[in-house]
Image 1 (cartoon, helix red, strand yellow):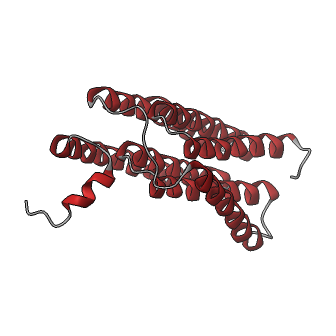
Image 2 (tube, helix red, strand yellow):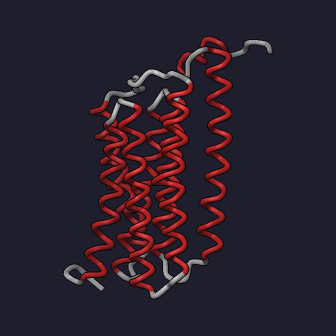
Length: 222
């Protein structure tokens, strides 16, 4: 299955769309725009999972797609918007690095993902190889977002984006058990709850969710 065949082209388009949205997450400084991009990435992930269900003739991936859409395109973005509204947070945030350096670092990470994945998957199908390369790129960009953002809400969004990449990798590998995909999604939902509690505690104590503000409180006795 190679370029020019419908299954490959659609899978490549959906994976590329998720990667593009990862760059959009890095580019944005407005929290609302980041949440919107994360919701759209979740919707594309659901489409990617459903399409892999068609390609692999794996009906269980339709359930994965349904769970991904409900959790990542609807529930998680809704929870983040509610958190943003209840805490009356600033709509714009500063970054640890400028947008330009972050984008350059993102391009370098995508190149690294390609250099790592393609040689070690030389015997696999082309669609699986490129899905894994795109998925690893999404994971690395999510990690970069967590490193370069000082706002706790955006770090949670980076964590969600990383998990989107992991699920994209899981659904792209034929024969991946459904329980692995669903357990991964459940784990990240738990992390989201923990992250929400963490954000509330920071807000309650310091009246801000800018983690850079915490540096002056290091070593403070409770």
